[in-house]
Image (tube, rainbow, N blue to C red; front, top):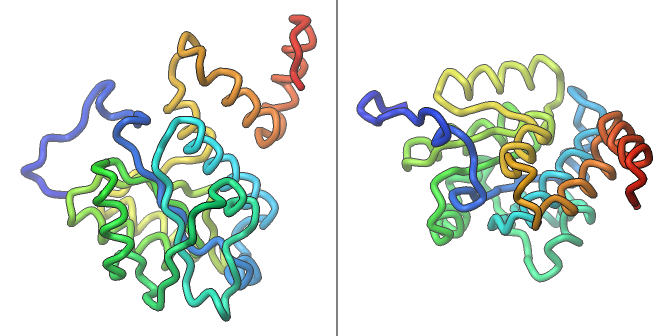
Length: 217
């Protein structure tokens, strides 16, 4: 982190839909096959919720794969949300070394970069740390990411934090983007995401709707 840059404080420290761009990296079959730090179903659930949240709040979302012919396509749960978008297929392990990805992010004009990827210590950490040097404030969504071992995941997160990347989770990102229930236009969408992907919180929310006599379907 550049010591000459004034840190974000107060509300400016929080994510907003207007300043954010989402980059999803290598959520492919081959990467999931090596995932050992998290339950793969949990990561799929979380990254799908994250992508749905980005779409709900109008956040530009960039998809990228590595050597798709051998590593597999991006999972359909993500691709189906952005059917018109063909993921940027790379040979570079560090996504930020592919100029097409860097340009796609830059073209959005957004400076808060939210990233999730497989694997944490490589495909997430490398571009997250690299993007800091280009002036982005980088948020790594750790529960929508994972690695070949718990140690690899934890060391990857530690390395990013030491460099200045901000660690966060899917639920935190969604709550941060909504931030006020008076923003009624996105309340039905965010409620649907939590009901579908929020686990025990989603179950509790459905129960609350039931007690209030509201329709949770």
